[in-house]
Length: 124
Image 1 (cartoon, rainbow, N blue to C red):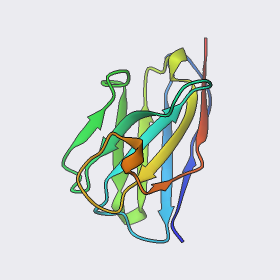
Image 2 (tube, rainbow, N blue to C red):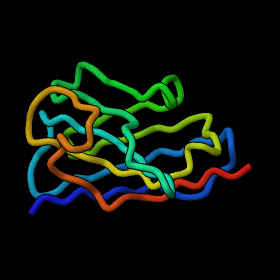
Image 3 (cartoon, rainbow, N blue to C red):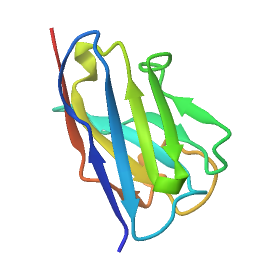
């Protein structure tokens, strides 16, 4: 059974930093596209960042470009999201996602596996 488990969420002041981790179990994702999405109250789930299965390209939403960095440690079957210069509007539940194969994807419906989410709250 494949499971993705996020950690690292919490409360942070605006301008601060957090690093989210997502550990996968049940299968290896070393060559699988991985992504991060977020959902704020009353909003639809939106794309944040993605890394290709070959690990040679990353994609970011315009809202986080230059502030967030997605990376992986394939030996640990883990994907990270380093978040710097956090803003109030970054407050949301953050989800990691994995796909069985392919390149890199920004659409949530293309991912096969999802974590339960971790809450990020940015305060002023």
